[in-house]
Image 1 (spheres, rainbow, N blue to C red):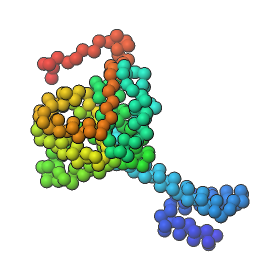
Image 2 (cartoon, helix red, strand yellow):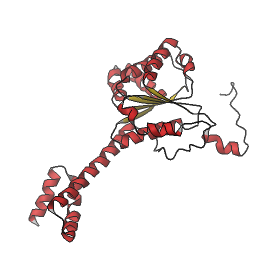
Image 3 (cartoon, rainbow, N blue to C red):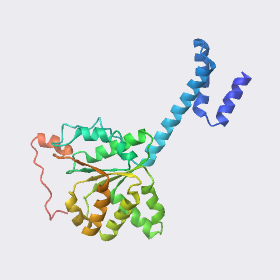
Amino acid sequence: MVELEHLHDMLTKLGLDAAEQRLDALLEEAVHKETTFVSFLNRLMEFELQSRKEQSERTRLKFSRMPYIKTIDEFDFNFPKNIDEQQIRELAELAFIQRKENVILLGPPGIGKSHLAVALAEVAIHNGFTAYFTSLTSFITEMKKATACDKLEKRLKVYLHPDVLVLDEIGYASLDRESATLLFRLVCGRYETGSMILTSNKRFSDWGELMGDAVIASAILDRLLHHCHVVNIRGESYRLKDRLKLGVQIVPPSPQAS
């Protein structure tokens, strides 16, 4: 018993907490099954490694700031009028991350672009990569605050460091020149050094107007599209499908509405 207590103590001091917690059960199992010392040690270390892998994944998921949990299998590929399921499945094999390529999901609101972006990022996290999620609006807000506090370079590193950066909702608000320049710095910083997954409801031909500067828009697209997989999705909003089935007319707000 003294030796067993000493073994528990040594495992704890070595930081092998999962192995320490599992030790008694595995010892009892080894006695009943008359397993070899090597087999017992293999089981003990496998349990420790699996525990560390799961903890690492939980830590990466927490760091990623994903807004929700989504998987590719949960996506209804039958709903959009046009989507290449095979392309999505191939992207989920993550070769694009290893090659530091980008993915841009294009299509109207409500057809699942953000769902797929999050799902791809979570596959990456599960396979040992780091990821980080932000909307374009949140990124611009953070960068402007950092600029005001003279901490832009430090804050920008948060977005440059992960293996995968998800930049959601490009096109829902026009950018001023400062905002477009901040986006350009982000794209330049990650160019050929890390992957980006972007979602947008705007065609590339509209990005000049969106950013208020055709030159900056062209420079951004030049870098994004150099090594890129473009996923075009077409269809009606998934969020409105039940109302549409019931024959409820969706009336856009008038320009004068507040």
